[in-house]
Length: 179
Image 1: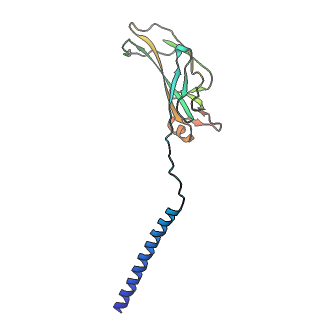
Image 2: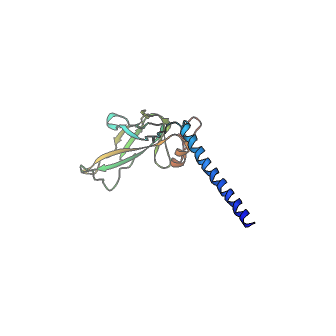
């Protein structure tokens, strides 16, 4: 009886080994004879923008210099700076020390202080003008001059939840964003 159990176990183990080798051999044969295609190369999208027009040229616009559609937002930073780039202790105040004339439509101000371009901006395209003009209303401190910087930021427009979650805006059915 003991010899019969050992013989059955040996047959079972041998059958399992043959089955396992068949599976490995069959898989290898399939992979060798099948056309699995070439490896795909996935490239990371380039998300980039820059302020391309300054107030010296009469307007402030932003260009999408990346390779995908994006949404744009801009922070406006005003300072008094000396010749070495040092910033005065007190920043100039909007509508007290300087005034901005905002440009064409297409922008809205968020509750976080950023100005948002409401439309999706395609690669290589420009926004409408955010600022059309800037004028000083008071003299700068002695040894300092007025500095207005636009800090532009871009985020990929697809998937839409990226801009919703990161910038706390709403994407409308037509793709525009709003508060």
